[in-house]
Length: 420
Image (cartoon, rainbow, N blue to C red):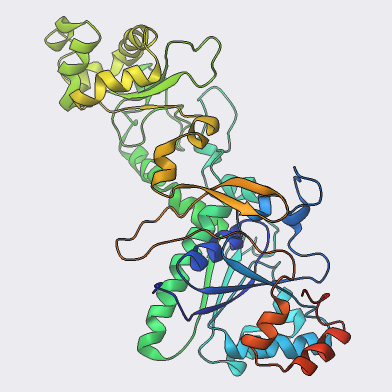
């Protein structure tokens, strides 16, 4: 028994943010019906194609465990089918441009009339306000949400992160909102409207930088490297390079082989609690009691010197040897793992964090599995659907149309070519 078994999701999402949300719901047991344009489908099916004639990894890795239905929602018969879908489903998820559902004739008010228990979940770029009608992509969200302005080095430009905190991050937030609305519906019997703005989600993930913005009122941020270097602070949270956001001094340091391997690095943190162990492991035992080194405040103006000395030591070892030496001493370190190293990590496959999936068009591919683990529910990752693969099945099983009615719907142009 899956947690969301019996819940039907009408999935009007595309590209990344919405599909991330609905894929999680599908992994949790919901019946996710992905509604796609006949003959076209989700735009990502044909974006960044690496296997000719097959759906791209962009699509397959974001649409596991779903069923695909082709439907022309502008066609009158298609609108009638969509109305039936809203009657039968529990949640409608969409990340259309603002106003798109209204123009289709399915405003929130109309959806409530059709099904008062329906939960309508939306992802938009910005919340209500002067930017609410603006189109937003991943990097725009990272910039507008405060992440880019606080990422990078002090003497360089703002940077976006490779983690998709705008798209996938917002999808994660919306998924939690949907599950919460479903839980509340059990108490009230009513559906409701749930929304997540990409700017808001990025800001939530960057909240420690908003913390630092307020701390600036009380003086310079002493855990930032620029304080020890005597560089004045402005009135906004600065870019902090690879400093630790938790206030513990930390840096990314070179390891053995860095000259030829761009990922031969480790992250190294010098917490106060392990300072003496750090001194011992790098061969500087005198620093434990030396004047100007004994306490964290005294070390602030010497962080560059301290990390240069630690790096001299890390450069004599691989990033994994650094872990082997430091972990038994509780010194926080972590290797910079490449995507290739992660893809080859047997431990991640053992936990289901990485999975291998068979696909009828492209063969076997690697994907990221469910990041959330349960003690009483197994999450199996099933391949993404082919375009319109389940149209007949959904019309029959979910909506109860007869075989003749399905043929009439197909003849009207409301759906794509029916699959056998």
